[in-house]
Length: 187
Length: 187
Image 1 (cartoon, rainbow over the protein chains, first blue to last red):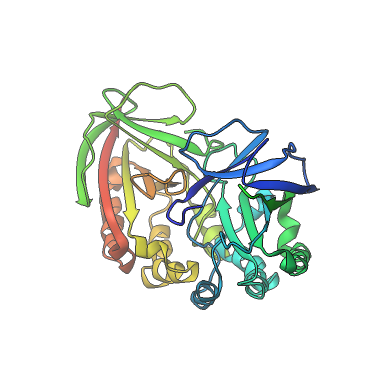
Image 2 (cartoon, each protein chain N blue to C red):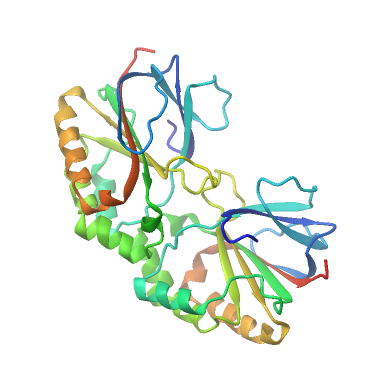
């Protein structure tokens, strides 16, 4: 992933940089299963896949200035050579989440769920990038794609992060969630 | 405009529902000039135009719960028969706006510029709908399209609203702004 580009496509197919280890549907309908994943710039030609999901990076929606500064000073971007595991979590939230006012969404995500504070505990070990889908078109199957990369030794930490977030009040608004785990291939 | 649809295309061409009265470039580069405007669902077939801009309606980004409630209780949607004038204002903000944290953007827009409070003074006379462009792709020429409709008698009120917003600290971040005024045609 180039750091300047914003729009990417995740393609599940028969070959790719990442090999599927597991795929689990946590809420809502399942996704097709493909043995491999590639993450490509949206404007490049690419092979057909069993599934495709597009996402765009954008400005943060819920951070205070101090939180943003702390996050930027500590986190590292995806692409580290030691990060041999990756996880893609596409998420869709219920309509009543989106009809809340901005400040109410921040209150649930930031204050009641401590989403930002919890995430900060796991950087830089867990590299994370958030892609938005909801405003790419009217018919996107998910609202976000969250992409994580980490070293195999940090997988228990990653599991703990997921467990804490899924137990938070924010997650009551999640109506569809799929978790795909991958190992890096040599290619 | 259907109220359920989210993604629309504004097409400047040789015919359409709205007839161009004036077009003014306030900051940044100009747009081509076309005598008419149509606003269509993005997935409908439509004629070529001199220019096209796409935008999608989405969740509010800067409202407190009380502000949202007040706005929803007072504002009226575009499409009133008496609203024979319309204004389209495409806007692009500087990169340093987008690199601010969410809470800093809210502070500038909400508290220092009083954008929400000022806007509330002009509803229901001025009908307004905000379309986002920035996250439709990586190459959108504008970040937002704001669409206003009002009766000819309310044009001085609209001018006052614009003048107040353009004098606010938020507008220091605007790097491109074009203003297009239209009259409804009988068609």
